[in-house]
Every structure is written in C-alpha cells, then in structure tokens.
Image (tube, rainbow, N blue to C red; front, side):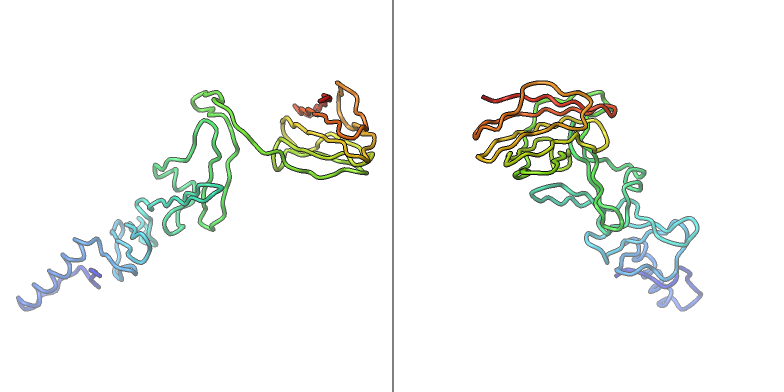
Length: 239
C-alpha cells in the first residue's frame, strides 16, 4: 500500500518534513495504490485499486463523489457454448464499455454477447454485418431439434430452438402455421411410423406440394416460410 492521509505538508523539523515528502511522493508514484480508496480525495485523483483482480486504475470524478475506471480490464471467458466479455469487477456496462472506446465481438455472422453490471448476459442476434454491407459468407450446419412423436392434437412448430425440426407421425394431427413474430424459414422432417395418421395443415396463407401418406416408413419435408405476417407451407415427399 502506498497512500497518504493528506497531501498537505505542515511546517516541522527537517526529518519530519522529509518523511512526509517521501510518503506523499510514494503515494503519487504508485497512483495511491491500495485495496481501499484513499481517505483524502480531490477531483481527477488517481487510485490504483489493488482490491480487485486484476488491479484497476481509477480516477476521481469531477464532482469528487465517486471513482470511474479509466479503462476496466476486460476479461474473456470461454466455454463450450459461448464467449463472454465482462469488465474485471463488473462495474462497466456495455454502454460504458463502448463509450470508453471498447470494441464488441463480431464477425460477419456471429452472436454478440456481454455481461452487464448485474451479471446478466445479453445476447445479440445472428445477423449480417450491415455496417460494412457484408453478405453471409460460407455456410453453417445445425442438428435438427427432435420435437417427438405427434399422434393427436395440434403441432405448432417454432424457430425457437432452431430452424430445423424433426417429428414422427404416430397418429392423426394438425400441423399449424407458426405464430412466432418475425420473418423466418423452417424445415420440418416428418417420418411415418406404423400408426401414422392423416396430417392436416392449418392456418397457412398458402399450401402447396405433395400429399401426405400414412404408409409406415414414408418421409416428408415441410418447408415453411413466414414473411411480413404471411406464411406458406410446401410439402415434399421423400419417396
């Protein structure tokens, strides 16, 4: 710790004045390093906060009523599902980070994610880089979500969880137009089992394509597109 309780040096003996000068100079040289804030503060004062990991340099506000990190170190955390960026002590929000010259994680098409002061993660949408006008390059793969066996009632697919779905036709049921907001395309793969029943399409603006069968082992693709509130379904037999 290299701090002083006061930067004022009173008249005193030479030895005492020299000791005070050394104390003040040590505090200045170390930017008032310590795990707690200096006692005596003035606007613009620096404090090298060693009470956080990693240590962070802070500056006293103009109103002398708090501390602002000159630039909170940004930690990057990796796990199997995501990369998370956050400030070292959680004090910087995304707005603070960007306002202070920070960069955000992005590729032509990559999820952006942040950690706010409360620790809540904010996920950005998968999107084309509209700033530079870049088109989606390359491709991507996904595992179709298994929505189980449908034997009765109504199945309403949703883009939540992925745009590729697979189900088993185990009895008569209705396949309804998705109601999730926004524009999107879904691909539903349907496989008939021994108890397959009639599939009824409902709620679509327009339907087209092949007819469903109830033969065991028959398979189908249903391509669903929703744009501006209009929804179409196209059925393709795979045998």
